[in-house]
Amino acid sequence: MSLVRLNIKGISYSQTQNGAYALILNEVDGDRKLPIVIGAFEAQSIAIALEKEIRPPRPLTHDLFKNFADRFDVVVKQVIIHKLVDGVFYSSLICERDKIEEIIDARTSDAIALALRFQAPIFTYKNILDKAGIYLKVNPKKDQEQEDSILVDDLVAEELESAFQETYKGKSLEELNTLLDEAVANEDYEVAAKIRDEISKR
Image 1 (cartoon, rainbow, N blue to C red):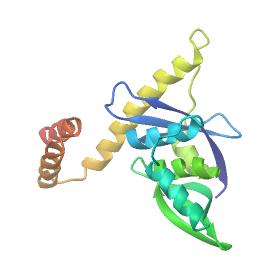
Image 2: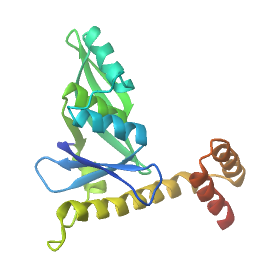
Image 3: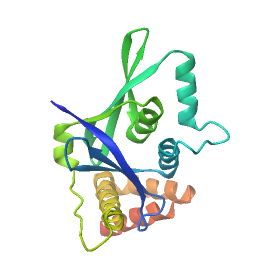
Image 4: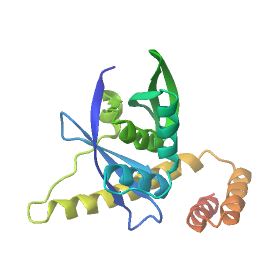
């Protein structure tokens, strides 16, 4: 399977989905975008790494990992987004120490936050881009950034909804009720509402 190199196009906050961000990756030799839904902490960490001028007063988790790796001569050579299952992207860090290569499993948002700090290239496989890649249409009458933002926002909502349905449709009522209790206990009322909707459908 051939690898396709990706660059980071940007991060967009979703107005429709609370606390959700879309990280948009762009294929280097093409026009397709790969949208990945990430959490607020990871979005902040990636944004700080993109903005070279911003220096947090204390190291963030990804900065700590970089400092730790530097101290012990570990280098992240590249990041590969290698799998897509039920709307979830799986990634690997290709690391090297003393000329020995190791592959470490990582969440995609963490892997990209680290790739930025190590200035490591980001890749995915062509079949993943064929499956999940999209073209952002540009309306010439509107400002491109505004248009992209609107489309990305819709995209985040669609992707979250799709991932939610895939995650919960295979669960039993008992499992859904347990998840509902957990969501309420964690004060994650948006997820609780969706689980309640799923229970009502049954």
